[in-house]
Image (tube, rainbow, N blue to C red):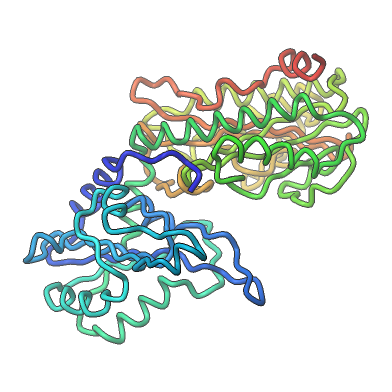
Length: 430
C-alpha cells in the first residue's frame, strides 16, 4: 500500500458498532477479495473487499475476519486469519503480514494463520447458532462472477445446514453511510490529491492534446501523492463526447473551441473522491458556454444547500429538478409548453439532465447508504448536476463531494478545487 498508516482506532470503532447489532450467539465472517486472472500467469492488481477493510484495515489478499462477540473464550471474539509468510514469499512477492504487523494495523489481538482456519471455524460454529454472511446488496450491484464470499457461503451452508443464516449487509449499509471523522479525513486527502491533479491539467491542456494525455497527467499526479490511482475509470470527454454519460475511451483529439468534461477522482487508502469539472480546451469559454456553465453552477450551489439532516433523497431530487427546469427555461432550451405538457415520470428537464444529482460516496464511489431514510450528519454525498446539449456540441457537468453536518451547513471536501469561470481561465492562461 502506498498510503500512510491509518489509526487502528477507526477499525476498532467499526467492529464495536457492528458487533453491537449482531444477534446473540452469532458469528460473522468476512473474506478478502479474490485475485483475478487475466490469462497465462497475469493478474489484475489486488483490490480489497470493502467490508473486511472497513472492519479491520487488513489490505491483503487471502485474509478472513471472524467476529464472535459471545464466544466462550474472550480471545475468540475477534480473529483475523492471514497467510503465513516465509522467506520465499518475501523474496518473490514481498513479505506478508506477520502476526505482530497484523495486530498493529487492525487492533485485533488474536491473529492466526489461514491454514488453521477450517479447524478453528468448525470449533467456533459448534458454539454459535447464527452466521452472518457478507452478501453484496448494493442497489447498483451487478456481480456476474462467483466471488470468494459466494464460495464460502455455499461451502458453509453444506457443512452447517442446521445453523441460522443472517445478512451483514443491512447493518453495514447503515454503519458505512455515517462516516467517522478519520474516514472524512481520508476522503479529504483523496480530494486534495484530486485537486493537485486538476491543477496540473489546467496548466497542460491546449488544442491538439489527446484525451488520454490528460488522463496520464492526472495519474502522474495521483501516484506521486501516494494515491491508489483512479477511484473509478475516468471520463476525459472533449466536445460532443461529453454527451455520452459514461464515455471512457479517452482517445480523441482536444480541439480549439471545444469544452472538456473531466470526471476523475483519486482513491486514497481505498477511500474514493469523485470530481467533475468542465473546462475550455483553449483556455477561454465562449459566451454561450459561460451561460450554460453558470446555470449548472447555480443548480449545484443551491442543491448543496439542501444536503442537511432530515432531507429525503427522493424529495431532494424532485427539488433539484425544479431548479434545473428554471435554468433550462432561462437558457431557452425549454419553453413553458414543454413544462406544462411534461410526463410526470420523465419531466421535461430530463431531456438535458437525465441522471441523478447525488449518491453516497466513501469506500466505494457509489457507496452504501439507505436511500429511503432521512439524510443524517456525516453522510457524504456527491452533488453533480449537468446540462448536455448534443446539438450545440458540448455538455457541462460540475461535481463536488459534500459532508452533511449537524449544524445544517454542508462541508465541501472539494472547496479548494477551482470551479469559478474566472479562476479556471486565469489558471489556464498563466
